[in-house]
Image (cartoon, rainbow, N blue to C red; front, side, top):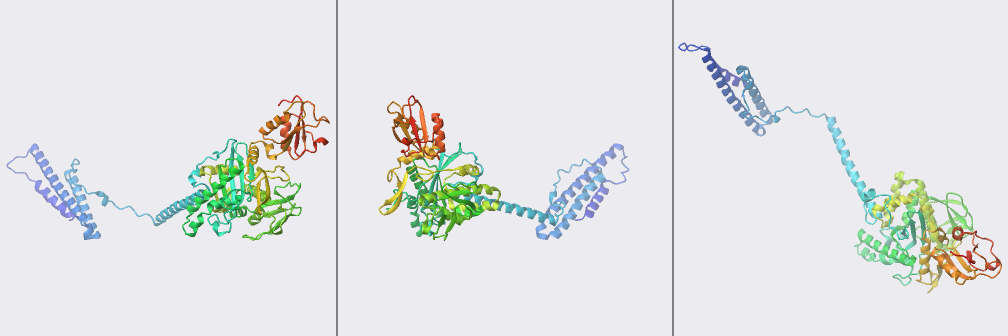
Length: 600
């Protein structure tokens, strides 16, 4: 339908209802003319509305045929219908001059489909959107991958924790502690080179090194006590050595491994069970509560030391002092230290005293495991020497890690993460990791004090000894196999927070007064304060060693400086270093003589 036909029809109807000549029989009046004009106008509008409705109806019908009749043909029809609609509206407005015509009742076609389409965006805008969308998708995927990667790492090194708990934890979260405010951590290493597959290495889950690290977060005091691997104790074997405890509880997994049923989850369960058994054994021997455990294997030590660029150490002998920044390691031979071991790693070394050496991971491990094997020297203490070397290597590693600022070196951090993630298991919570990192970043560990349970150049204690039992070499308590009470008392003193207790100085108390039982009473008071009293007796009746007023203190061992300071403060006297002849027979570090009138 065209607009021309619509307008022609309206024009004819207009002419028919608006003739130019009035009937002669009826004179034309103003009132009559007006009425006729209004009537013709109404007729014209009505007809116009009808045509407009019909046109819109045809337009809707054409729209419905758009899909079946073809887009091009339908668009042409719609265009003609639009022109008809526009022409009719213009006609009504121009010829009847009535802006009040109400067309609301005329169905209106949805104009959205007839609106002119927006211009297509330029191609380069489409490309830009695609690039941005791709980047967003990649970032989401990368973020998810990083989350899973770090979450798996946190889960491995903690007791099933997650990255969220770590990130939102307080770095001042206090660790568990005992009545003395100390946090006790068992650190032990297995000989295997794969945490997940110890069965691939003979003896891979025997604990080669074991130590308890005790930290007071409030005072910054840190101490370490090592127990020898050959310490005789009850285990699942007839041999009965401390390094078998973990193996006895973990080796049950081997049956599942042979059957192909040992999932990682199962291995972790057995690892936890074995580690907790070793924790309980340490509590039995040392008499303290063990709060946490850290299980590493030797691969971790090698990889971490390599990641931080190696460590620098110097070997010394006897009273030789070293003022450099390097960690000094004492040997037992004036030539230095050597080990000709040949095992899984194929290492051996020979180092001289007084010279600085740069050690990579494997060489550092070789020193940590040295024990005069295959013609070696410098580690005549056997297991005791090995424990000492291990502690010094760890100190050197911690010191170098702090100096390396690994938190700002992504490459080093990732290498350490890989080494630690695969070779470390702990029971720390994810919310406690930040606290550990804060402690590691402080100087607590670098100032850690070693507590010995056996006699050496710097200690006169003798709580452990060595000997043959049933033709097997063992370490056992000096009080007897399984007798740990003396060790309990000694460790309690060491952890009391009093510096002099770490020296283990032996004190003899003599009664130089006229009263009875004075020396015994003083012995009890000293022991309550953490001092070690090995003997009480009456003082010699000459050379002014009895019958005097007050207190006299003699220092036999000049190396026990902390104890000397504590005794001077306690008794408020000067310490005498010139020992009278009648006192030289006493085997001790200090002699305290109680005179008349002393009242503590």
